[in-house]
Image: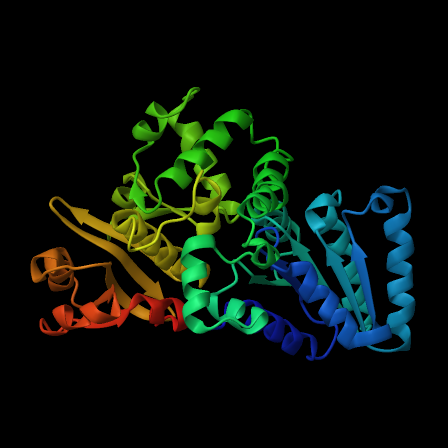
Length: 404
């Protein structure tokens, strides 16, 4: 999979093997998915030719600190190919302007210097690159670890990795803590959720009501893979505010890789944007952390398990950078309409038993839009139901392991 942890690391390494100076490489992604780990591994491979700088360190705010580091980088580059690694750029004031001025100086002088920048949110990092570094950067997104990454790094079987992905997400720092749910939940809250919602977003002047933002995130986590109108969200919170504010905050949660607000499939942009979103928390770890008890199992909570499997599959597709929509025309519905490098697919996700009647919406959608291929993701023992109708079918475990 080209979007997994190891794939992103190898892709970045290949780009750094190209002649320098090249474009600035901007690596974004949520907290605790290993962006710093990738930089440190690259620095280890490059040895003395690499300079690693943590831009969230206290000394980075001292007057003249950046100028000193930049002079050191230029001096090293005059002696040979050099790599400058800038970690957590969103905490450094006006970082994009400084990097733009610096890289332009490198281009003019032709010094063999590569620059890599990381950040935990597309808002702070992405805005800077769009506004001042157009044409000077390439972006890579490390969103969530995939089951294959978990299996490879933590020596788990394929079945264990996939089930863990559904029940507890895939944040690597939490894997060793899964035997103690209280510690695991504290790690997730203190290292990921609170910093992302309570600090990364609050750094922006756009957030006027932090309590409202937290409530919206909590509602999304409580309703995974559900279609929620803005009015329904407003009716569930203590301080509803304007619908425009709620929509705006959903967008902020999406920019920080916490939630995806999936829109209805429509060939008309106005109808698509006006439709109520289907909210997809982008890691099932968020679902698990919100529970007072243990995460569901198919044997004990089949309905909730089915919702969690659907959310895991849709989050997987979003994190693999596929375009995801849903389709609904009462009483017909399709769980996901996928467009991207995997092709065009209309997908229905089923756990437990289902009948041909349950696939009516899928068949009707593909009748109207025959360019989309129908696909059912289900339990291994249930694949014959779809295949008897001539519909492609795949165990959902295989989908989470290898995509399409």
